[in-house]
Amino acid sequence: MSEPALLTYRVTPARPEAHLFAVELLIPRPAAASLTLALPAWIPGSYTIRDFARNIVALAAEQEDAGAVPLWIEKLDKQTWRVHGIDPAAGPVSVRWQVYAWELTVRSAHLDRTHGYFNGTSLFLRVIGLEGQPCRAELLPPPTSELADWRVATSLARDGAEPWRFGGYRAEDYDDLIDHPVEMGRFDLVEIEVQGVPHRMALTGRHNADLERLRRDLEPICAEHAAMFGELPIDRYLFLTTVVGDGYGGLEHRFSSSLLCSRKALPAASGQGGDSLADQDYRRFLGLCSHEYFHLWNVKRIRPWAFIEQGLEREVHTRLLWAFEGITSYYDDLALVRSGCIDAKGYLELLAETMTRVQRNPGRLCQTLAESSFDAWTKFYKQDENAPNAIVSYYGKGALAALALDLTLRRDTGGGCSLDDVMRVLWQRHGRTGIGVEERGVEALAAEISGLDLDGFFERVLDSTEEMDLATPLASVGIALRWRPAQDANDVGGVVDALEDSAPARPDIGLRLQPGASEASVAVVLDGRPAQLAGLAPGDAVIAVDGLRVDAGGLEAAIGRAPVGEPVTVHAFRRDELMVFDVVPQPAPADVCALRLLGADDGVDAAALARRAAWLASSAG
Ligand code: ZN
Image (cartoon, rainbow, N blue to C red; front, side, top):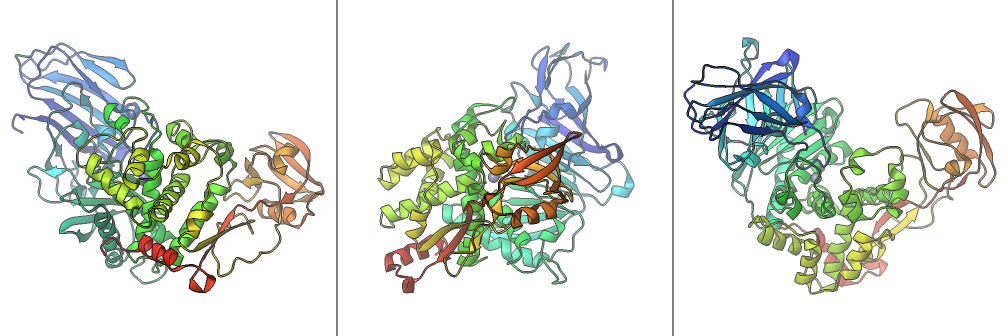
């Protein structure tokens, strides 16, 4: 190839059988005798240190017109290298390395003979000092002819490459370069259009999905978000979906998102299973698409100040993830009902599940929402057996905080202001301008544009572990809430026709078993509940209750039949030691959410019904 004028990254899926990408970086006009290269420690959107540099192998550098003698490379730390001995008067410097890619997640890289996938954070070394320069990415095909039918799906701007082909692409700067995941292989395309902007979904992996159905359901969801913000700031969008037997995940980018989903979550072309929107797995997949798409505004363009100011070398702490993940989680489901994808009852089912998931973990009484956000790096992303006791999710509780804020704004301004208005102003002031959001910026902005004093609200919801009051805001839109005890371990609540008293609480000892295991292996012991008081611990293998052998199902059944308040004898192994515990079952706590949609017949006034209609109405009008 001819001598490049720009920083150029060449990527080849060189050895699929060894899971190795080969990368070459050409620096056309080196300015000094040395240059420093570094790889990010984390990928934006996934807040934990991943040390991508551990997968780099065989780094080498040479300079043209300098006798092709290898340049000396000094390693400075786990992710930084310095290349020495460069002659600025000689030709381009070429740096070559390989990247081991065998992690099939949306945040890393994966390569075998079926496909290649990578994020730039896994492959592209940054040249320190040249981050602001435009650069070129040359994506080269695999070297073997049997993979000659591979194509390329990426939202990188094309620079010579034909659509969906290997060839030249370009990026405005390093941040742009690493914000476009790349799929190489064989894929199907779903084509949709939102406000005249082409959107595509590329699906890799074996599937038999009804793509027309997917197209029909996805389009109005994207259109709803665009109408709510009032502006669609992109000229293209790509959902990169990898279909596997069992998996779930998503990661947002400015012009695309990467999704990982289970085959059974997609509507089947045969019309068999997965076909109905009532299908939970499919609804969850559409919710995931909705979530990542909403991020193209909220977090990719409206950004926390901290993320703009600090790099990807180490943790960046912010209290704002409740807004960037929580508000996004609130709107991902809300858009399903606003776009007509599900009805109000279907939406309340999703809401009840979120409320139950937050309520049944004692960690909500231990960690505030702002702390959950700040400590995401070491707590939310590094959950252990004590996590349900110690932390609260900034996704789940964050979504409920957004719900409470939205309904409070609507009620207290007489419908004059809502969270939609807050999001639009955030977009105007921060998204369009690129000015970062200060740590209390969302709170200040909500108070400013609503004219309300929200200090007490935010103090309680973000900075205290007080139980959130959701009954009052829900009542303001004619929805009744009641907490009831769980009927079994899988009970996540839902919508009911009447809120009369349910069956009496079943006996419960407050432990969760290892999911999927047939033996009764203790995964979580809930704080302050009978199992903990009796001395049971995570990892214990329960073998008998009152002298009778139990497996996982047997333990739940035996406790369910035990009299409340009277001890049962539990035998369990801890390591290789048999232990005996006297456990006193108590009534299961009322931590499952039941919601009921009320009407005029139930005494709900017209104002509340009008508020509900406005809240759930399409933004497109
Ligand atoms: Zn998210």
